[in-house]
Image 1 (cartoon, rainbow, N blue to C red):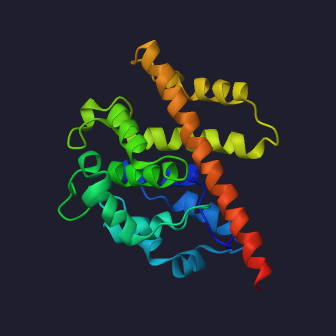
Image 2: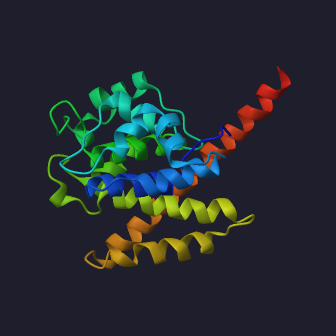
Image 3: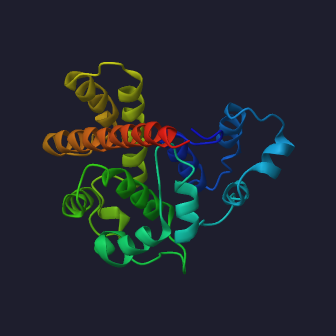
Length: 227
């Protein structure tokens, strides 16, 4: 694992801060210190350019280009974004569910969250299955009011569920359900049937991230053979 990285829960917190027109400096500072760096001035100087831009987020609506989303996504642990792949997603594979850039040529925070979700889901699902999830949970990308659940809330929730799965040496199906039920308790505006379905989607997404972890680990072992 490279020195500096973000967990998905940290990424969710960062995106939430930006959406609320606040600087994500605290969470970035903690992540940077985890990588062994100290001192606020060094943080600003050494962070990748995308984070310097995020640190300036404070007032007004904030959007991200595809390249910025890819750069940001590649700071996540167990993730491997490619700009050409993401371009194909928005132009073809999930065009109907991501929509056109909502801020000029930039994508809104919710759209960025959907792309992060797709990156995670593709570890275990084909695009037909991914589209079914996007349609069920998020509906019309141009109208966030018809979402069953907010994309950023969904992303953050399954990220927290992954943290539980990843740190438990022998997680059980009952462990998944218990944590998913806890996380979905805030969706009291949904019917019980919808809540049950969201819980299943949270578990599926979290397990997809766990699959990415195993893929990363497998590649590391293989690469060590050729060193």
